Image (cartoon, rainbow, N blue to C red):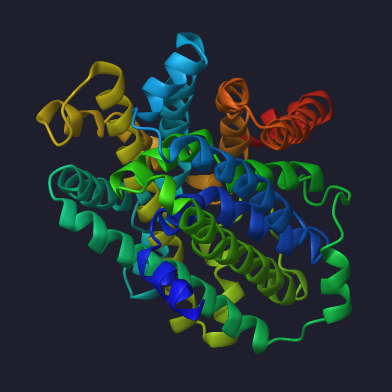
Length: 415
């Protein structure tokens, strides 16, 4: 048995790819605001969100593994062309929308790092340009060299765990009320609004950030790229738990606790216009005002860069599948450039460096049912239908309540 687990550990990869995609600006922003504004009260959001997401992705893996058809083709033939195009279109739109907060976060993190290093006053547009050049070059390579895919997945794996270790250091070196932490994992508690941000809004953003429609599109293709089939169904389940669920739960929980122990405990004012330098105190107050702030900046930058690249990969996949472009062709690689208008975000929303990820993540979460309905139609298992229906009910109810009660204040916050 131990030999099987060692073999599984060597083979995992698609789950870490999903971790790199989900640990972006949406997760960072929802966790930072959760801890800074509400202490430990929203600790339950991360685990509940990722468990729902992993359950859905597990059903998708069982539908996809052993099916020789391309995932979009399978959706079109089993569920209908409308569901297939809605899935692909939703993945494309979500990748474009999510690009804006990634660039905003990454560019402002670069500007903050430059300030720490003695170059104050830089406009975040310069940081956005640097990120754009890096992302375009890397994404174009992604479609040309299969060996690069393995290397890149390995790098992403260590980025995920590096973020987790840095946050663990903060938690271990600050005062933590473990009883309150335990109570924070009791689900479906929504604290009152603080500084114009409601607990329900942050909880919904966390729910939407855990699994997006572009992740649901990428996942079966990443299984296919690895050459996994029906005999890897057990490996796929292990991969989702170890590669995605565990890193996500650790990262979000530690970020909420670390932020609660620092920003919240110290009374730091965090609102929709909070800057990177303000939120960087989560590490700066423990590790040091220079090294801690730089570590936080580059941690946010790494999260943004990995998500930006994978959003571009998703757009390339959508273009390839919809228009039947050959993988690695010039047309396929050009499709990866579709979301680059997101690089304009720092020119428009620079004063919402972190918060922009909250409303955009909620907007992308509203697209997720487009995929769930299609997979629900393909599902033949009663257990699978129950899981997909449950996920739809939770997400649908949350979106309905948000639109009913929170939409006016949300629009006012980003205006």
